[in-house]
Length: 199
Image (cartoon, rainbow, N blue to C red; front, side):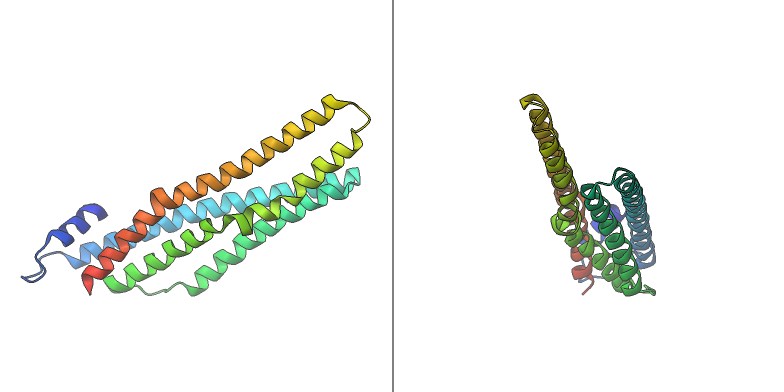
C-alpha cells in the first residue's frame, strides 16, 4: 500500500469512531519514504560535490599551467560550493533524530528534512550561483580585454558566450524553484496534514 493510499485512508476515516488504520504500516511507509528521500538527496549531493571537485581541479590546474588569475576564481567558487554541500550534509546528519520509534516522531523527522531542502533550494542563488559567478565573469572579461584588438567579431562571440552562461545560471535557478513547487511543497503539505491529523 502506498503512502498516498494510507494517507487517504487516514483522512477518510471517522476519527470520532474507532480507529482501524494500521499505524505500524503507516509508520513503516513514512520511514520508507524518508529513506528513499534521503537516498535521492545523497545521490544528488554526491554528484554535486564530485562535479565541484572536478571543476576545482581542472580550473586550478589550468590556472597554474596558464598562469591566469581569472581561472583561480572559477576554482575557488566551485570549491566553496563543494565544501558548503559537505558541511551542510554533515550538519543535517548531526541534527537528525536517530530514533523515530513513533509515527509522530518519524513524520516530524521527515518534515524537518523536507523543510531544510526547501530552504536550501530557495536560497540557491546565495550559496550556489553567486559563488560561481566571479569565475566566468573574470574569464570572459579577461578574454574580452585580450581580444580588443582582434575586431568586433571576437568580442561578439565572447558576449554571446556570456549570454549563454547567464542563461545556464537562470535555468539552474528556475529548475530548482520548480522542484520546490512540484515535489517539495506538496510533500511538506502532506506531512503537515498527516501530522495534524494525529494530534
